[in-house]
Amino acid sequence: MDVDGNNKPVAYHGKEGQEAKFGKEGGLREVHDPKRNMTVEHGFRPGDRRIVTERNNRTLVSTGPGRGYVQRLYTHDRFNRPYVQRTYWAHGHPYAYAYRDHFYGGQALLPVCAGLLLPPSVL
Image (cartoon, rainbow, N blue to C red; front, top):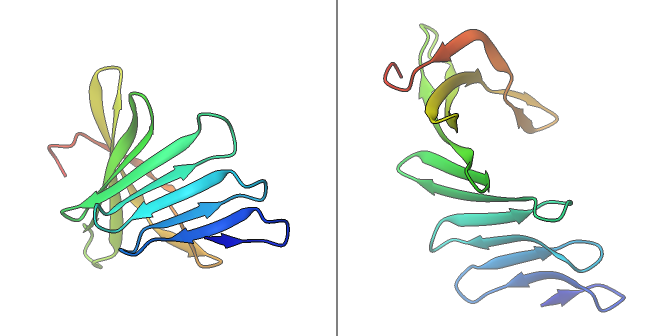
């Protein structure tokens, strides 16, 4: 366990690659388990967390009870540019959106492609 000058936890590294990261006040912020290919991120608000699992080139993100999306990468246009397809569940129906990924300051941004709302069966 790594601690700061005030003896508060900063990080933990397990024998099999598990990692935990802690916030400034010592609260748990992120847990990663490479064996399960899963990351659990705790937000700044109470109850705010994301669970991310990656399998079969798809990413499942749960943002709370009954909320989240499945995401996959694909190339769709004639220039073979990468797109991200996310399928959300809302009001008892799946909705698929296509995004073009852009990078700013080294971070991936996902702006919505205008007018591209497709049912999952099309993608």
